[in-house]
Length: 224
Ligand code: HEC
Ligand code: HEC
Image: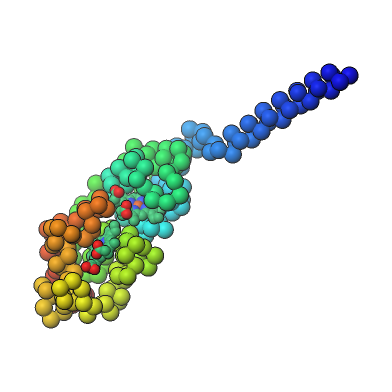
């Protein structure tokens, strides 16, 4: 009888522990079946819901819309493949990666079935809209926002930038000198080859000559 009880106990615990394993497996990420994966990687709004909005947008505001993502697509791919990004909360899960890379393999369509056209380059203009969308948001905002590592200098909206114009930096230059725009500290730091912004360690590309030109035009015009 003792032996029988012991055996029952043995089998019961085997059974329970295998259940336990089964539940554990369920808890770790379920594999996506191919048709679900296919669906989730077919257009931007699904990829956004599964990946960008939940894992990136808290730090990269510009990834909440299709153009913002397309503009940086190859950098996004490289940062995710190397697990350099997301910067918090661990790497993307396998299914999030499958969804993202599946979508890229399809030509990163906005709408299902319509591969994105290589977007014709829109010329940069010296206006807040154009400068912010093409230069400041992609190249500065990840650090210069109210929660970022450079929150002492918020660059997230035009009014704040304007209000900070007379702040003095470095060797006594105004942040933005509206009388002598070319003296602005902001331009100096963008052109500084030793310690430029964005910082070299960030992997974020510096402004191109064309962007620099339009950026200083924008300062000269008084930040329209
Ligand atoms: C917790 C904030 C945070 C999150 C979340 C985050 N990033 Fe970043 N990201 C940064 C910061 C800060 C930088 C600037 C470089 C650095 O500090 O490493 C950066 C830089 C980048 C860069 C340019 C430099 C590089 O390493 O290639 C890309 C591309 C990028 N992130 C993509 C993403 C993507 C895609 C996601 C979501 C899957 C994401 N990031 C999630 C904070 C974040
Ligand atoms: C990866 C994070 C990061 C990015 C991206 C970045 N910055 Fe910075 N920035 C910092 C940090 C950190 C500091 C403070 C320490 C320092 O001066 O290096 C700073 C300082 C500054 C300063 C003040 C410098 C001083 O001497 O005190 C200016 C102006 C500035 N950044 C402008 C920009 C502009 C404009 C961009 C985009 C073109 C940009 N930054 C992109 C992190 C960043």
